Image (tube, rainbow, N blue to C red; front, side, top):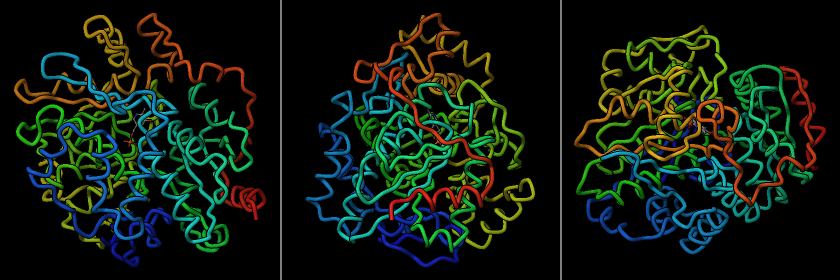
Length: 462
Ligand SMILES: *Cc1c(COP(=O)(O)O)cnc(C)c1O
């Protein structure tokens, strides 16, 4: 299995190489050259398997020769052992034909743990075998950073630097990033928004001298290995509702388009999915684009669902690549136009996107409303991101197709918003109840590429 860039100008890589490098050298994102297929029979055979066994069967064809079957199965087992629920991704019913996929039982209480815990294991194994070390730099709107730090803390051959927008993450998110004491963990609070953090990260990747000197690796949702790990729960949840003999739809609270793109890959592999519904908060660039074809950035408006406060959805490039029939030059041109503020998707490409994706956006007031309503009528306390999903799902779902809405974080990760909406302050699970007592360690940094690069060079273990 080879991986190619969405901009068509970088060499094809193996799974392991694509995972270790993150972004392609032409600025594009890696995607598999071909999508492995699962037949109806293959999918039916997942019925009754554990999450780990399902994960092995779904991901194995993408991973190639770098990892043996035995080692890969072992890394999957280690990745999910620390989850607080035996099912890993349990499904609960909200209403007739509407289900909630709880993806928040990992160590940092957000779905990011599914990918990050596995990627931590895969990195460690690959780097040890190669005798190499890397510097991981990540940009986060809150959850990626905490999940990355949790996955890489204390590893011998990795330094991990996380850029988050100062003052714009929740207290639980911040503490999860600033309280780990391991010397290889560096939390950096940057002036600006998430998009600024992500832009500086991309600049570092495009600055080849720096990239090569520190052996830069990325674990943002642009990393293909993360997308792949998220494909698994689309299969496990659909199978538990009767796939492949029953078609389901998914609604996904969306920011960077990574999670929902994993659903698209599941569909392309053969999982019978009717609609993939993009749910956004007031930062609705994806909803506007899928509605009008115009992908135009505007100012980020901070919301109560901060992990979706994004105006440039990096992984959307992967969907565009397919919608433009894998024409890397066309994608590169769109991305150039984006630097000047936006682009419009061609009629044909928009039609291709709409074959799979629907969308809806939700205001702040509606989000609060939905948290209250879901608690009183469905008996489920939702985090604000999950509430955005449930709201859109209720509006768009068809009565005869089961809808699975992804619950992307635990309500206790966003206690202020949940309390404001419902009057209930959700407690942290016991295993992290002392988070508020642990000492914090963080460095304030300016939105300045050169300053960031020299700080990183200074700090890395040599
Ligand atoms: C990251 C995140 C999202 C958005 O996921 P994308 O893959 O970026 O679309 C939604 N909700 C929560 C809680 C998140 O942490």
